[in-house]
Image 1 (cartoon, rainbow, N blue to C red):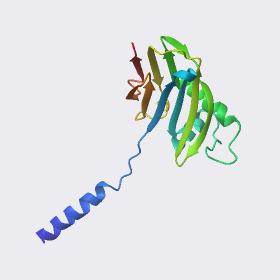
Image 2 (image 1 turned 60 degrees about the horizontal axis):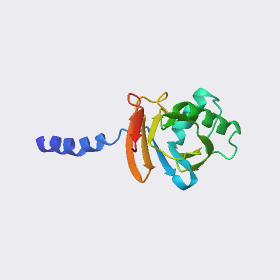
Image 3 (image 1 turned 90 degrees about the horizontal axis):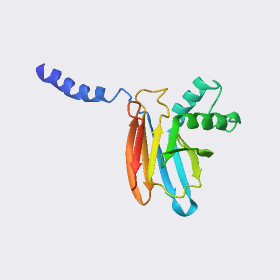
Image 4 (image 1 turned 180 degrees about the vertical axis):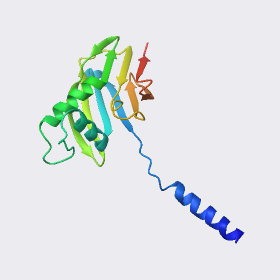
Length: 167
């Protein structure tokens, strides 16, 4: 009898440990400075379901992303939100980015952004608060390739800004 209880305990306990689904809240933003084009190119990858939930709560509860009949206003909402939550300073000055567009991979929305007319980068500061207003657990991974140097960091709601120096 004791053997049967131990057998059940060691067989069932590990199986139960993996039954609860754990949801991760993360985005990945890649930033690359293309010196000969004087351009900073940004690709931000965000889970479709998380961003759709945010757009529905903030702007329009009928929005459905990655749909053939996606509303024309969706790009405007995405751009408005990203311009509010993604802030960039180059050489100590605020810079604006252009929202180029988006596309979809399975489960992921890729947003394409660009900052034009960037002659040089001595300092680069980014604040990425995307989805922090929806999820406390949100983490925004930022990968940069600027002046041939690659750096990566994770931004969280308590620490949503990073400054890189290239002097």
